[in-house]
Structure formats: C-alpha cells, structure tokens
Amino acid sequence: MILAAGLGTRLQPFTNTRPKALVELSGRTLLEITLTRLRTFGITEVIINVHHFAEMVVAYLKSKNNFGMRIEISREDDLLLDTGGGLKKASWFFLEDSPQKNSSQPDEPFLLHNVDVISTIDLSQMLQFHKENHALATLAIQHRESSRYLLFNDKLQLCGRRIEGDSPLATHHSPLLQSGETSSLIPLAFSGIHILSPRLLPQLTETGVFSIIDSYLRLSAQDEKIQAFLADNSYWRDLGKPADLAQAARDLIEIGPLP
Image (tube, rainbow, N blue to C red):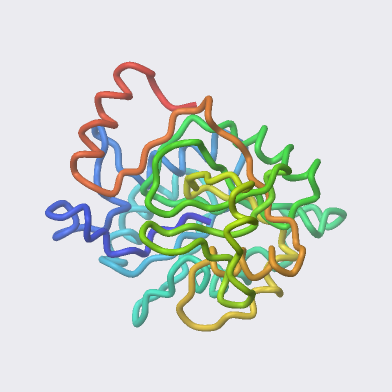
C-alpha cells in the first residue's frame, strides 16, 4: 500500500495545484518513483489511498496504464483517515482471495510505504528479516535526528516513543515508561516504510482517524512483536518540503538511480 492521501501542506506551493504524489523529483512524479521501486522488488499489486486532488491521481494512473501493475484506489474523499485509519479502510485488499495470492501462505506479509520518502533500503532483505523474526510489523529505522523518536529495547523491539518536548510515552493504553526504564532504550527514527503481517489487520481496534504508530504502541504493550529493521547503511530522505526535493535531486546525481 502506498500512503498518498495527505494534503502535502509542507510541500506548498507545489501542492496548491496537485497532490503530493504527483509532485516531481528530477522529472518523475513521486508516485512513479515509488511504484517503479516496488515493481523492482517483485510487487505487482498495489492499493493507493487518495484525498487531495484524488481525480488527478486516478487520471494519471490511467494515462500510464497503471505502470503495468494491478492498482486499486482507496478513496478518503470526505475525511483524511491518517496512516492507521487509511490502512484499516484498505484492509479488504490484503484479505481478499486473489489468483495472484498464494493460498498456502495466508499470512504473506505486505508493504506499507509513504509516497513522499525515497530510499535505497533493500526491501527484499527487510522482508526476509520480517519473516525470520516472525514479527507482527517490521519498521525500517535509522540512527538520525528526529523530533519524534521511537524507542526500542536491545532486541530492537518497539517499547515506546519520545516526542520532542514531552516525557517518554509508551502509549495512552499503558502506563508511561519510568525514567529508569527509558535510559536503556534506543531512540531511533522511523522511515515511513513498514512490512506487516495480515494478522495485524483484525487487531486494528481503533476507529476513524488514527495513526498506525498508536496501534503499534498499543500492540507492543500487549507483547506483540513490533520489530525494527536497521537501515543505517541505506540512503533515505523525506520529501516533505521543497528544500528536501532540491537536496534529493542533488543526491540522486551522486548516488544514481534508486534500486
């Protein structure tokens, strides 16, 4: 699933006339870059959530013949549902019976990817890591500066989060972590790339608008394994602001096309 429904407010003025998915980087839309990268790793079926200038995304995909992939649209016309609510609305896509899906692997994981990030993270390696660890969810993370750290233990399992200016917070469903508990936890920055097991979907008990991170924190407090995949050796950049696009364009000249 590609998360593309956001308003892209930070990307103004580019998003005044188009959705952030159709903002261009080095002559290619962010949506094309993401879809091409997913296809490189063997992904042929994708669902995309849309809201801001939704019809432009639909028309664009039609003009590109869906990039040779099966693409479904999850519309959030009336209300932006955030990452968790958006996934929950689109969950039918991952639970349906499909000739392309292997019925002998009912818990075959799937990818959740923000449209406004680019990286060289090896998704095949991340998938293998997810399966080997039998995780409910695996999050690509890095040691880098962030205003919203996730906190992991020495087994790289999610234990809480830390928001700039706030006390360390586990989840509103469980007690706050004590200072002694947080001192041994590792603060890491999330990349907006997740691999999830379908058995997560029925456990999304939140309703309406909610962040998937809130669900992860609740589930980790219930001893579910929300695992970190360290991607420190990979290139990654958030494309949330015009300056980020300009820097990414310079970066791509140096590192070459994304694998």
